[in-house]
Length: 370
Ligand code: NDP
Ligand code: GDR
Image 1 (cartoon, rainbow, N blue to C red):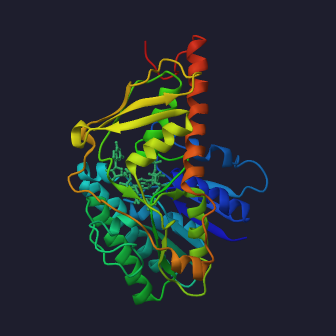
Image 2 (cartoon, helix red, strand yellow; image 1 turned 30 degrees about the horizontal axis):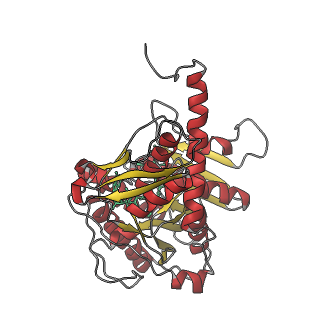
Image 3 (cartoon, rainbow, N blue to C red; image 1 turned 135 degrees about the horizontal axis):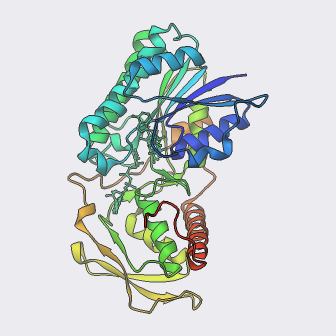
């Protein structure tokens, strides 16, 4: 039985990847940070009681900023594959926490590579590094491929640039099987609530249920190549199964503005919207809606701009060229953007419908103090 170690197992991709590897009969080890509240919601369905027989899933407390702890865990697990998904992954937040981001996302990758080397596991352990389309940053060519030059535009992008190159360097210097997956944006119902797609689908669900009036947004002109996380973790797995270690772009090849994503999400919930104005004065108003939706009226403003969400430096346009992954890995996404938006909106409507039912029945949210 192969053993995989996943950093960032409690995140969106960690949850989908753990599920995939368990179905492929791996023993899955995950590193989770200690927190004062449970932070395992996304993987609770995979949890196996260690007192049971045939356990194939184990969590270890750890942190990418702590090398001794990483060395101990890697020594104990002796993994065949390490998927380094752990990171402070929010681009806007990285402007507020640049040093921590460099430590966890940049040096954290070095700590993993160095632990494998020091433990004499270079022949045994294959390493996947979660690289990102944020490396491209300032647009130099489209579509972006494995050969496009990098020009990161955030502390997150710069930290990930170090991680990218240290992975390449360890592969070349020590003959390690270490690869970068340069993944473009990928989303799902498990996406963190403050990334743009999930922020939109949550707000749309609440507006459709009469629980919220308006959604405040930043730059609506940004264009992203959005795919589904479920498809993208398949690519991570495939990257580590090849005869030679190489780097791959994983993308759909289609780009869409944030504005269009908002329109698609509202439409999925039965609300037609129309954008008016420009810049900080742009807004969207309701143009049509299903009659079953409460508290809405035609002309009502449902989207407004709050410049707080603008970034000091922005990545304007991402569109990936997945030709290498298609040809060499045989990878092809199953979801298109329409199917992704639909799944996310329906999941959030279901989530908030449940919350509303409880609240209408007089039950308070459990963590509220009186
Ligand atoms: P998430 O933000 O959902 O998950 C990040 C994970 O990293 C969480 O499990 C988090 O733990 C963990 N983590 C954060 N800091 C540390 C630390 N110091 N030590 C150990 N673990 C830590 O990200 P995604 O699942 O979306 O992304 C996975 C990886 O892929 C990240 O590296 C991200 O940068 C990269 N990436 C993501 C893309 C995307 O579109 N989703 C595209 C390209 C790259 P906790 O739950 O405790 O916060
Ligand atoms: P990104 O994702 O920065 O591409 O990084 P995010 O969803 O945060 O932003 C996408 C684009 O939307 C614009 N935007 C807003 N973004 C947020 N979060 N909130 C808003 O209100 C808002 N309004 C407009 C942003 O300016 C941006 O242009 C994600 C992360 O998962 C990274 O870890 C990963 O490496 C890259 O994708 C690929």
